Length: 159
Image 1 (cartoon, rainbow, N blue to C red):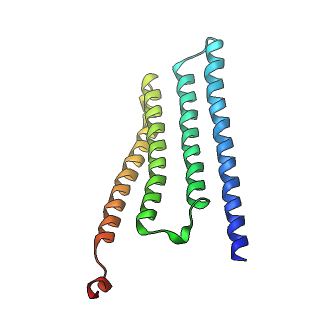
Image 2 (tube, rainbow, N blue to C red):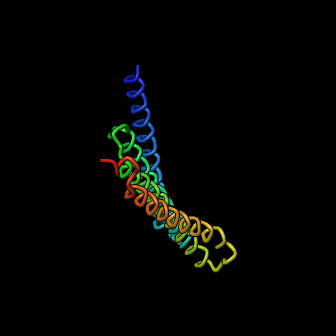
Image 3 (cartoon, rainbow, N blue to C red):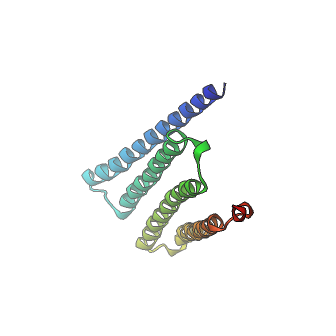
């Protein structure tokens, strides 16, 4: 029964990753189409370019998440994980999120600054602040988990 459940779970993760990948491809096509149609129509402005770039950035993050889901839940055996593997896995996932947040914030800040609409920079600056705090939190997590992994447990001294 456990093997059947594990196979169904892996199949579900594969299906989820394929759906995410399809969504990312649709966003890439939409972003490129927006850029091309605006260029052919003579309507390429900074807003259209930044919107296309924003779609491409989000699609990149979605592709990374889909890849992460497959690597972590389909290709590896969860029972065989060490503390170091778990730390690397979480670091990889958080790095994807931090990069996506940072890129989205940069696009938003650039867009609002380009249009000289400084009142709309509050949201992108808040997103960048969240990305910075997530990066700091990831650093603290790595520091503490490496430190705890390096400390000998009580049972180690008796050998």
